[in-house]
Length: 488
Image 1 (tube, helix red, strand yellow):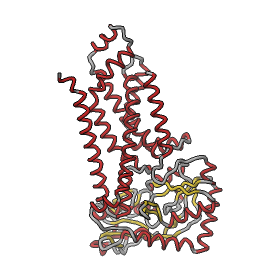
Image 2 (image 1 turned 90 degrees about the vertical axis):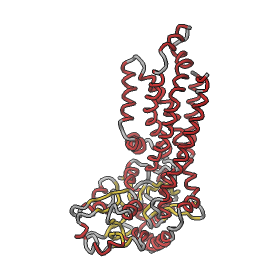
Image 3 (image 1 turned 180 degrees about the vertical axis):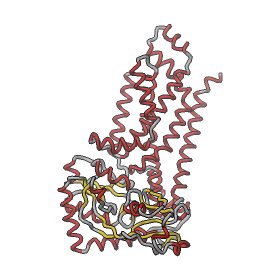
């Protein structure tokens, strides 16, 4: 038992060292408040909004660029701080800012009365106009906003465009996190129009995607920087930098440079070209996916075994706690559990886990609920006579469980544990929503770089299949070796 305990302590120490030393995307764990403001500024952004912010391969390395990023770099420079960029979904930005995971948010945010209730905004730094993007063959169908009534319209979730869409009578709105996903919806005829800023739309226009003549009445929108409520010190510093940039005409220059950089995005090449050219993205994603899955199952294994023993005890309250743990975790979506651990813990207790740590914790506790039931079934499947025989030989109950019952139970449930590992590999893709650079996150980055809607995800699907198929075959080999003694 002591050996088992030492092993758990060693594994926990290893994980803490690993997760605190690793970067996820462009992320570094938040540190003290003082350090965040004066030495390290953590920027929250959604890098699929060219030319505001987007991924770009420069000198063979993936970088987040755009005129929002250039402004953030100037703010950090004026404060003498190091800029750290945290990439996440657009609708997660305000939660990250409120929970203190990031110091400020730049992502083409429009200051609205609703948003001002939860965060502060800097002075405006850019004025954009809303436009309607449609398929080329439908361009003549929408000369005014009247023709959009009752149509299927795409908007970015939580954006000012979503609010505009809600004012169109009988419009069937599709709200998604990312602009490239909306473009894909338009290309596949799932929606008929998209409301988007003109600066952003410019990057997607070609012979098939064009602008309609229709224009929202409230077409002008302002962009400002989001600051955590009450952080007047940083707010004043940001406004000072914006005043300097605007007076020098630097922001106009940054917009032009970012637009030129965005216009250089690649759209050519078949799926094999994409897979080879961006192989480094997928390789990094494979590493993080395997790390997440392996540690998730490992700690799920330990926790699940403990919970299964709780469920089989004769102490009523302990048994009830074990049952409640399993039922709650099996009865709630993993995405909700992830949001509670990543944002809820920060908001409630001030505990800021990195995306990697949040991912491992979420996968571990979620997996443990299922593994607990697998272990319980395996232990209960061992003949009761085995325990009675061991006790009759003078073994204590714990010793009999460790040396007689559990080895037989593990052998019986090994296929089920293998299936759980395979499931976790696939379900780990959920962690990408908080900026974890796993396979799905990297596929999204490649999609934003190449403007190809399907190819990056087909490549990701092929990688997942190869990983799970190879693991399945490996587990079959182990299972056959373990069952060799049964065939005598």
